[in-house]
Image 1 (cartoon, helix red, strand yellow):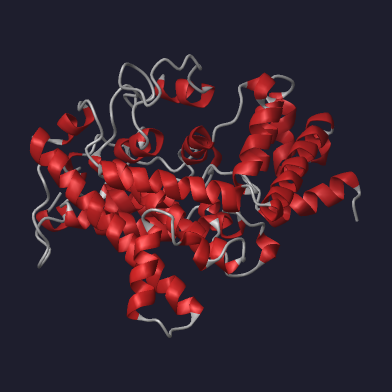
Image 2: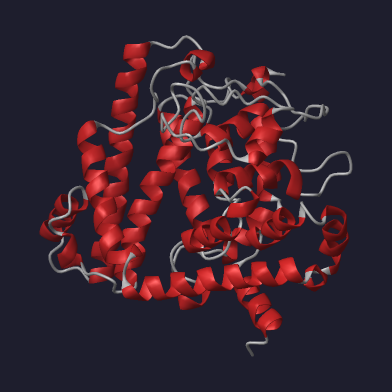
Length: 403
């Protein structure tokens, strides 16, 4: 691959760090393909995700509010784009591979079902006798099996580095460095089945780019849930004054711009808080990287701790902000009502499809016949997990005659 395609000779671009993922050194794809003459492997992965059906559906999948609540609240699509912007900023500053960080940011929510975390809890509940449901494992299913666009293979046939980052962005899943040591829960069957044929090395950390995507997700959803919560009048600016991280930033904005309207105050506070958190991640990550001095990306994977992270002070503030959002937004009576309804919709349509697989769309019926009886629950789960909020509501009305 040429130096231009490596991305190391672009005008004005800094040399990548020794521990950055090099697309020219990618471990490749499960199904061999000729390389592109115009795009690096990671750029090609990004483009495949952008063109996927699952990515388009994110437009009508909930973050917190069901789609009909309003046009200006975050969806999974807008959230993913915002995560990608933050991830590129951090990756560029740390001299990592921006394309891989962006790819992982765009892919990270593809496995989420309708109705946000409420839908995930409902699917996990009804699937408990059949192996459960996990949105991270479902993302891998989407990328390796459920997207059916190519003649030669199922899935998108993404690079090893992208699949590794999707699965392990929150840390190792097995072994002594797993995120939750002592957890006796078995590995989700989707992960176990896939790594049996394509080892993603679940006992190690993922690349620095994957860690960047994970922390960009954290920054994005905290800040944008504050924005959406204010827009929905679930809480007010005055309620944020004593909340760590956001309170001091809000006070600064109100001191600098005491006469500005509320909407500008909100936006100015959010954008400054995002910048503050990005700067903290960059500074803390540089400290960790300088101390560890990893010579290559494999040294990042073999580390005893994540190399990308927030400082201890910011972690404390971040937890306090999460606690505030949990009490004032995620458990607000309006949100609870939407969540309860979403859970009921998912559970009821699951039971209907399981009892009457002929009610599935025509293109799913043949697969349903072939998978019966043992594989039918997972197939129904796959179908529901891919639904948008509005399609799930429409199917609920059709199946249960709730017109």
